[in-house]
Image (cartoon, rainbow, N blue to C red; front, side, top):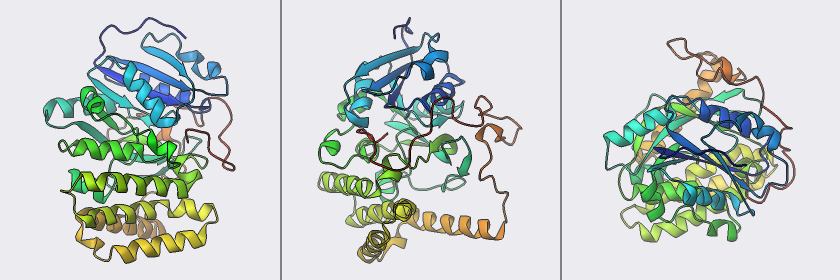
Length: 359
């Protein structure tokens, strides 16, 4: 697809897409609904085997959109192709099933302009399902976790590849996303690895509001194959620990513990109960002093409070509410542009192997 492109955009938005016709329309709606308008959209069709034309039809007239097709290289390879195509001084990546609050780009850009030492800015995330229904808030909402390099090793505060706005030159200097994880059979933690590499250059700016909708897809990268996701995290730890001697070894143990805990529901759904028990037992035994980390303490305390609040019904339960109906304190509905379910196509199948790039 060809179109007139934006001459000199301030931000390049990269959308890696593999067989995501069921969701990419909503992702593009959330990008086009941004209050900051000076950006280009680079959609990387990473060798999709399905026809994306119907999902993209209503977006073709937007001159900011470019579609680049390539042979399948995986999620990291698709992001890197978008990085190579980017023409702006700032670049943001959003997976083809996630959503942005309309103020995500404007607030992220303001944070980077206010803190010239920050290599990137990131926002908190809320969770939604395949039918655009709200699932859960961010664990970190209302808290002030440590978000320098050590804090981000202790706990992956960024959380996913759709939550950050980067300085383009800094990402390129870092080498982009590590495509060797896929070659080593452990794709999934490429975004965490890049964020840690960048945080070694300077503390990122953190936006304390949930401006990113992270979609839990049962057939997706982490939820569909938790063992692969865990291997990917362990490879990142093995790769980076020798290169970042300023990070205490205890922090890497914290990282493994938190990742294991996050994957417990996925192990349970997959019926990998013995693996789950052994993983968690090993993680806690290897990290008996985990509560010395302020971020790990905050995470455990907030998760426990969320469970208790849910059991005692002490807070309004938004679980299952359409994201389009969510209201902010001023009454605004930031996701009103969404329908009650995904825009087009069928939902992904939860069973069976993940696609080659894990999207």
